[in-house]
Length: 270
Image 1 (cartoon, helix red, strand yellow):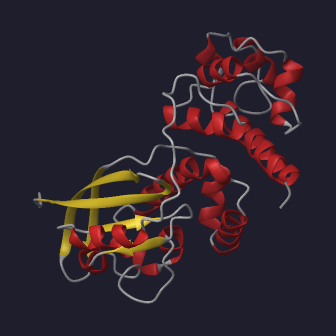
Image 2 (cartoon, rainbow, N blue to C red):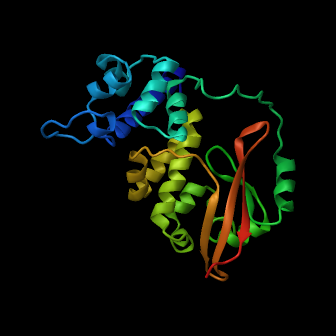
């Protein structure tokens, strides 16, 4: 893929993202009166542009994926108007190719290969732990994780977390409230993937999942974005029953494409 193709991919995704979030707001959210019936839900382009101090033409071009560049201050105003969460704001700036001025300066990134040391570290964790790469393929995991994630890390199946969540029949039994959790996982992945939307592997993964899973395709079209945060995780294990964990996730120093995920066992409330 050429640089021009990569840039076009991000512009197209930016336009889809803006339209999806504009459709979720109402005139009341901007303090505007609702006059008459609207043929489509959400705000009009002119209303968004006026609220963030941008010309309607310029905003329309952004939604159309044209080769225009919005300033960091304009993007900040747009994020406020669309009531974006911090994760969604970060996604907006990534797609627009601008650095969010509200963020601290990024640290220097080394090129050290730490895969071997990471594998040893993961194996030493007292509890389920695994490493995900930029496409959310499991690159390393310990025995506790293999025992917990039946159908994903316990055999020779595909190691991709998205494929497991959206395609594996086992996942639907192991993960309580499967649809809600699957939507959350995909929204986290979307936020995480904003830095490399032009990656051929990422595009192939998404397109394949869209073909194979109607639910994935529907969720992907919603353009939901959330931070990959920790929190309570519940599993209905086929042998151990209901299990409750607290999930924590870390970015790996010198390997921004890797994430370490750890699960801390919590006492059952049942």
